[in-house]
Image (cartoon, rainbow, N blue to C red; front, side, top):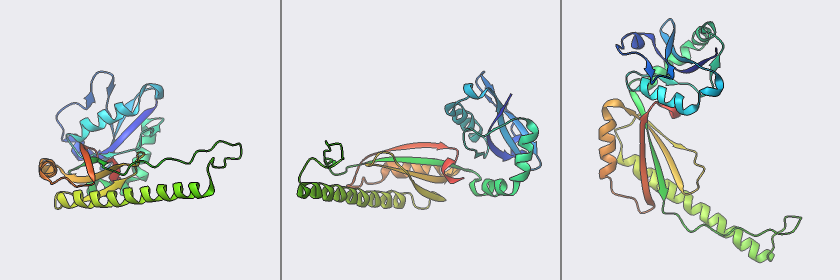
Length: 226
């Protein structure tokens, strides 16, 4: 049966845990040890193990020890292949674990106040030409570019304001890609003993004029920083 490899921790941290490594009755985590590293793996048919289950198992491990998450779909055929992976990637994995030691990722999803969405030029003929005059079409394009520029300015303003609000409480931060134009996604790598202070700092921060609302997410394993 294939092994879904969830993430990598230090073998000494795994050995030091007193509770069993499982989550619920359906899947049980087994550890494959190779020198200083240990890989968390689950035996399961590929079609029955989804990304949400992997996230739940990783969150359970992360609540106790540092784990370097691996991309969903990292599947190896047998234990020997997992040990070989740990041996080949050992130096890089150990550096990652040192960098994220004792941290978690806290996410922010910010909805911008945003300008009104511009109307798109209508297209009707088979050649894809705009069903409006050239002057109207150019005006519409200028409106679209102005809208994008305003969103970019709001993104920079809100990002700067929030990053400054939690200054001193994170190791790193990143602006993540967003599929929604008026939504900003931020990720912060935060030390465990600063999680509550990070939350409180944001709760008391003055709202930015360009921000409609924001949602605090996590902490969870540092997916965005490995």
